[in-house]
Image (cartoon, rainbow, N blue to C red):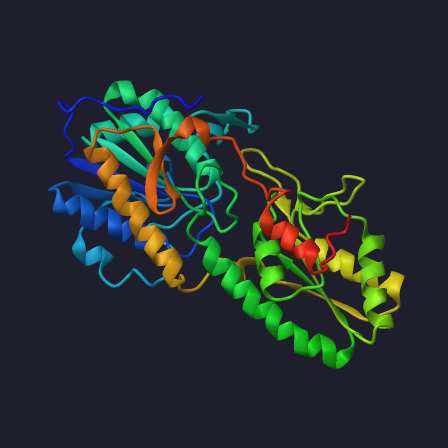
Length: 382
């Protein structure tokens, strides 16, 4: 059962708000910031930006002067079409697991969400808009739980190219990433066919296969490997060999960075460090070597990696981002806190952060997109 939305009384007016962007960058972040600022200024509110997630507050050594700075029309002019974020962002410095050095030289994690709330309230900031993915929105939920009684309201805006946030149809950044990946894979068809090669294309997505599935299908890949379906590489090799027997001497394999084999093996570039998470990667190169050994065909790996995060957002992502930003300001004006704005066609609605924090939206195995792939003969390694 869905819990009621958190809403404060009309006697708590908004005068100042702060904006934070956390996690990996995504096309559309600047469009959200612009929409938030312009919508807030229309209501007579002051806007402030926090540098690099919450490092602008927690790392005075890094930002001794402008860790939090005023944002007006001049700061957001002409940024709608730009990738990245004018606030900066980080995958490090999670305030719930902030790494500190102890007197003996060892390191440990501490919870510094209280420091953020005290700092914002000392600046007379009434509300915080957190723009980010699962990690950022989990932090936003914690800030709401601790800060609501102290007069700080918190609104979340869903951002991730991975599209793995629950309770929203899509997140901004995803459409741009899929469009770019599709274009790259399209280009690989001709070179793969010319050289009779296997091309293994590794894409981002962490533990969800949305980018791999959508880009792979749009670009007519022959095999798509996603985390939701543990794969058997022999099945992929059989698909490639069947194509060779049919006179099709090249194959395109798209693999999500978090895909895993049936034995549970997942490929990592780095184990999780204190205050951080594990870094996925390397599966593309490994599968290319192994497919070459099994099939006898030359294989190459292409890792799109951070190319998927950069560049100008598509028109869909720009508009989604603007709608999210304006909706976040409306939610504050209506007295809400502890909610995330979400896309539910045809409108943007509100969902509680406690229904989003710590949850992941994977590709549904009974979904139409996946079933379409099976119907047209794409191999998913199972």
